Amino acid sequence: MDTTTGWLVVAFLAATAHALYSPSDDVIELTSSNFQQKVIQSGDVWLVEFYAPWCGHCKNLVPEWKKAATALKGVAKVGAVDMTAHQSVGGPYNVRGFPTIKVFGLNKDKPEDYNGARSAQALVDSALQQVQKVVKARLSGKGGKSGGSGGSGGQGSGGSKPGNKDDVIELTDSNFEDQVLNSDDLWLVEFFAPWCGHCKRLEPEWASAATELKGKVKLGALDATVHTVMASRYQIQGFPTIKVFAAGKKDGDATDYQGGRTASDIVAYALDAHAENIPPPEVVEVVGSEVMKACAEKQLCVVSFLPHILDTGASGRNQYLEQLRMMGEKYKKKVWGWVWAEAGAQSALEEALGIGGFGYPAMAAVNSRKMKYATLKGSFSETGINEFLRELSVGRGSTAPVKGAALPEAQTIEPWDGQDGQFGTVAAHPRGESGTPYAEPIPGAAGHIPGECRVTSTSSPADVPAQRLRVRRKVGALSAPSPPFLAPITEWTEQNYNRNITVLQEGESPQAKLLTDGLTPRDDRRAPAGRLSISVGPPSPPLPSRCRRSYGKEIAL
Image (tube, rainbow, N blue to C red; front, side, top):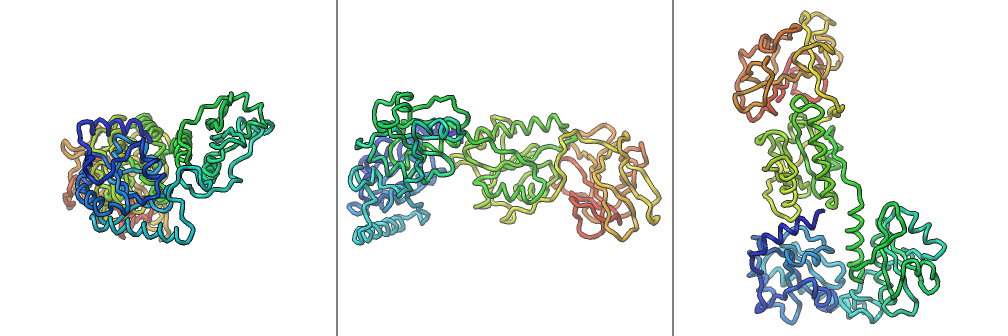
């Protein structure tokens, strides 16, 4: 995630806004400088709101939040963090939208999400439940993780979740180069001395972080009083000193770790550094249901609909794909899914996401968990896409429910071969003769209609590959540009018919044989990207994406 850029915009928008709470309120203002001391190191139960001054929902919450704070005085604490000014506070807690409410109870390093009603009564009830949990834990002798200054009981500064010491890799002069410098992993290495009090307090936090980061980031520890070669190489002067060794090929250099000393601080830093080194997401063509299912498992699935290959050619399409890859790289920390489809190839998906009214290329971002989506209203450019995704990343932007409350099954199609679109002619054959080809593309011939499948017989009862013809059409000024040899085709139908379409003779223009008598007008917005798709198939419900028997012709929009 491009947090710096995103939050600069948010900070700018909030520059003229006023904080939602004042010192006279019972709501305690929390900042990056006092959050650890007031919340994490305290023994109190806390309700914490992460908000932005410009957020309408946050403003609506203010009176109820103040009522709850007053009602809970002396029982639990109620605080608020202005995320436009103190972004780092919310980072470890995955704050993505506003307002976000967290309950810091028995285990301060693992706050609970509050998903109840936004009323003072509901907030107070939630806080009292947490207070009861803390009291019962203390009575049973299991308390003590709600706070602590960092020395007693070996709990460190926040009472972190116990970790496994074995997850901290013991480093020595003899194994350091092989374990750390010759690996591609991201490493955080603690140089310690056994007699050092700060090192002893760090030990449980370091173990807890190592356990939580297992499989992603490696944490090691080196006794600098014994293994002096490495301690000298990295100029260790005090204890503990933590060095960071970046992922990938290493040249022996390291940087100093400057973050906090709690497990949550260490984990947040390590995950952020790990995300910097993950590869950018692949932008995958939607060629079947499995692609969309994989994308839907992500927090957000970014779906792009690119113009038909006949409109852009391979070079134009590759430019669009490169643009999407650049955006994927920029937002890779979000671990979103990125897919694309050709205009009209996944028409059900387009309809579910409200695509079609803005032309192509088009983009939608889908939250499959909530079955809501947002569409790109601006330009399909680096600036337009970045602004669209940045708004989504901070919880802004208008959304709409997915039509039908579920994503449709994606049609199974052949993937793009990376080449320009090919035109071909259609040859005419006597119709109805048993075993005689009715229509088939002539490879390499000059013509106007590209054939994607092939009809081999008109009378055989067996399933045979069918032919799907794409005919470019234009309807007034709304259509995409068409070659001069195409006359306007203004009427079409979804019903099966056998008499109104005649196969082209080689070299003839489409308008000479595309007969429109008896066809009914349809709303132009239903036709994808200025194209009329004609498929060969049986009179049963059309399945444009599959090859079917050759019994007649159907139009599929």
